[in-house]
Length: 339
Image (cartoon, rainbow, N blue to C red; front, side, top):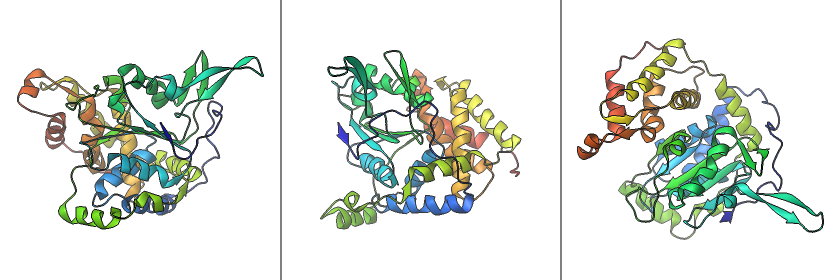
């Protein structure tokens, strides 16, 4: 388990969200978001769409799952995004012997006070980086369920609130690899989006050799925003306008997955909520105060695909959930964009 930098030593009271929003508009959001994006792209070469999606999840107050083969920069992306914001960050290396209390914290007996006191775990931070989450047992994975959904942790009957912003960025290797445990459906459903890094193109890989050859660019990365700035931007995103027709389009898209013949498990109502929240953030990054159907379409695969389970027949035919979502996006009628 690694710490970078240390988190707050005590959990915050439930409901504590720091200072109120400072009334930033879209201009302020774009300015701060561009600084964070530029900082992350100074470390991650040739992946602007991946960086934008990660920033979208941050502003949507969601959680991000990064899945790909080893060595393509999953952990580097997570750490770069975390270090770009001046807030408490904790990193957890998931291993088969990790216990739930290693994540949430534990009550220990204090000899001097003669009473039990709570020792907060690494989950008490603004950004929690979980490296190779699917190498831990399902019991340990479930330790994140409550904090990801309710922004709180319950230990020995006592509930502790988590400071906002709160974001879990987890990496995982494909489940076909040795020593991995598939994430349970309830766990995957709590991640707002799943992205894959993919291999860099030759020019980006050459640039990586030049930049990473002598030292890690993470060592030179300094925070360009504060936790309070992120809280303000989240408030701006919450007030983005979503027309009734666009909301209905998101519902129709999610509903279509529930009765699809190639899927044995469709997307949940939580998926609809995450899709609309992410679309608000995606539109804000485009300097728009309203959501259009294109935003929903661009986010449909990363937000929905990891929540779907294909049928046995679809697996035999090598039909992936991403393909099913793409087909639905092309097939469903698109409403006319309105403000």
